[in-house]
Image (cartoon, rainbow, N blue to C red; front, side, top):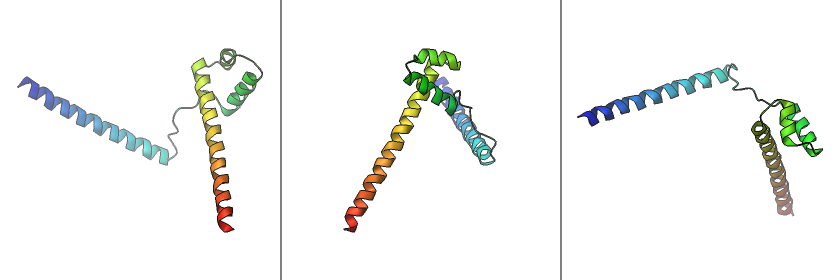
Amino acid sequence: MARLMLQVLGAFAEFERNLIKERQAEGIRLAKAAGRYKGRAPKLTAEQLNTAQEKIAAGVSKARVARDLAVDRSTLYRALQRSQASHKSDASVSRNLAAKEEQGEAGDR
């Protein structure tokens, strides 16, 4: 009997948690639509990231750059990874567009 009661209470708790999550997601969606919810501000601006990349290219250690920017090393590493990933995706998009254009030109002949 105790197990059944525990199961029922667990089911109600799970149901209530799902309702809370749905209401929260709806509130965030409405706030975003109204322009009031923008999420957390990034620790590194684009300008700071560019400066960091220039310093690293000049031979300054990443730990020193992170210290100069007053951020944790892991924050700098993540920002650098995201930056490299976006550059890679930009390059792959350009390659894909060029390939499609070449295929289109070959098909026109």
